[in-house]
Image (cartoon, rainbow, N blue to C red; front, side, top):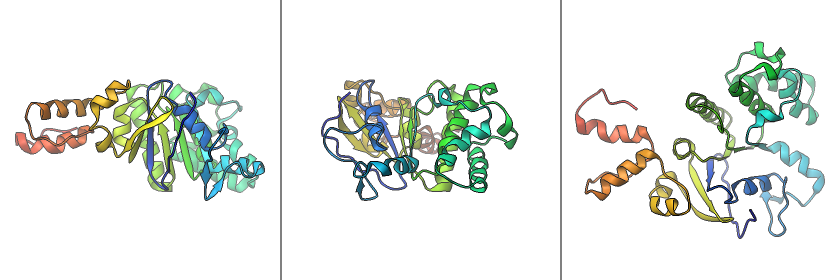
Length: 266
């Protein structure tokens, strides 16, 4: 999908979700962020400079803007977990001590024991492979972490666990996170801001509570809203004076006092 008239600022420290139907331009957009694709017109500015101003600097920019593709476990290739995670830091020219520190720290971010380091990545489960592949990106300590459908193909428990780890990593590191997702529940729970793509353009952007207010418009372009948001919008249309919510936790906070019980939990 060709992009058209994209004007987007990614704010330091935020978690930005990019959503849109298949073919809307989401993946094309994020591959421009670190120079994997070059726009025919326009510029991508990082730290005040056009990323294509000096092609020799692109390699360093790609270390700073870490892009994790969909199904990254298919890109594992080393004979041990340690070597796979260390691949990026080695290409950065770091010394062995710093490489070792980053490998172990990144594995810890993914909540995996160091006993995994000498194992073959191909002996691990799908969810564990996904974590190892992501750890390899984190080991480069990017300023911006870009994730293309990071939980694609995972079961609900593994999906929730991975997003919890990403959230924890962001809180500890302060890294800016940009992610593409089809799950509106994941977007509602993780994003500070949402960009909605449609036909190669930005159709809408704002905080989750702002974007999900436009449920009819989102449905019209082939998207959805969180199930809990649909319920509360329906209640509003039937005259109930509820605010719009987009997470189950928010719904619990609103409903719990009304039913007068302490047993209602998310």
